[in-house]
Image (cartoon, rainbow over all chains, first blue to last red; front, side, top):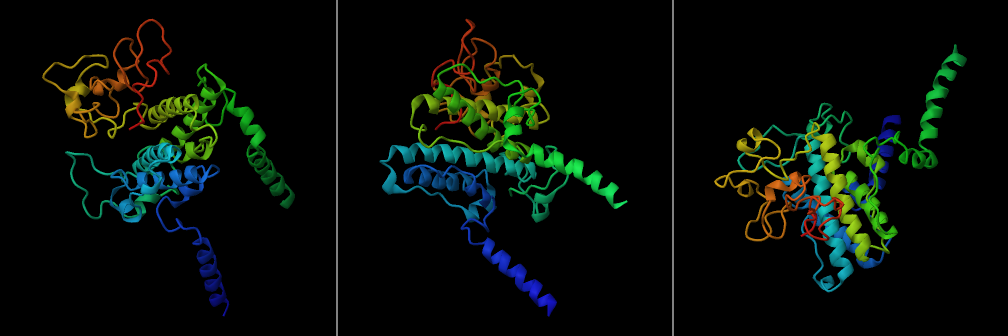
Length: 141
Length: 203
C-alpha cells in the first residue's frame, strides 16, 4: 500500500512537471531562459527563432525530431519579429552545438566517419569525463 | 559529537548561502576575483551607454550560448526588450556576443580557441605558422563546410569574400576582416573597427 502511494506521488509530480510545453523535449529548459518580457512580436520571435535554431543540422537527428523550422509568415513584415528571430536562431544554434560538443555527440563534419550505432547513447549525456573538462552531468541536454 | 558536526556543517553552508546572494555576486563581477574568472580582466569597450549595455548583454549571451554548464550558471541570455531595435544597442550586442563567444571557446577548447565547426583546418594549416599566408594553390576557403564563396566567403568572412580563413588572424593589423572586424595599423579599436562589417553572427 505504501509502495502504491509512493508510485502515485512520483507519477503525480512528473505529470505536473510536464505541464510546460517543452518539458519532454531536449534542451526544453532553454525556453524558460530566453527573454520573454517584451512585446508579443519580441516574445514570439525569440520562441520561433530558438526552435528553428535547435532544428538545424547542428542539433543532429535527435533535435530535428523534436524541433522544426518555425517562422510565422504572417509576421514577416514585422521588423521586431524578424530581428529577434535571427538573433534567437543564432543563439540557440550555438547553444545546441556547445551542449552536444560537451557530451561529445556533435554532428559529424564532412569527411569524418559517419556515426556508428552504439557509439552514442543516452548515457553519453551523463558522461563524467567529457571532452572539455566539465565534470558535471550535462543537465541541459 | 553532534555539536561538533553541526559546527562543521554550519560554516560551509553559510558560505554557500552567502555567496548565492546577488549582492556579493555583483561585487565579485567587477573585481579580478570574479567567480566567473573568465570575466576577469575584460573591459567593456568605450562607447555610449546604450552600446555598452548592448555589449554586456551580448557578452553574457555569448558566454551562455557557447560556454559549458559552469559558464551558463553565471551568464544568462540577455536582450533588452526596449532597446533591441536601437542600432547602438544592437551593434554592441553583436560585438559583445562575438567577443565573448570566442573567449569562451578559447577557454574550453584546451586553450586553442579553435572550433572545427567554425572552420575546418587542413593539415597544411596545422603545419603552418599562425601568421603565414597560404600559397595561391591552397584555398582555405574551400575546406570549411560553412563557406559560401559565391557570396560572402562564409560566416567568418568579409563581404568581399576574402579572408574567410583568416578570421581568427584578424588580430594583426591590416589583415582584413573577421571576427573582430577590420582595422588597420593606426590604432583603431579592434572591437568595433570597421563599423558593421565583418561581424560574424549575422546572416
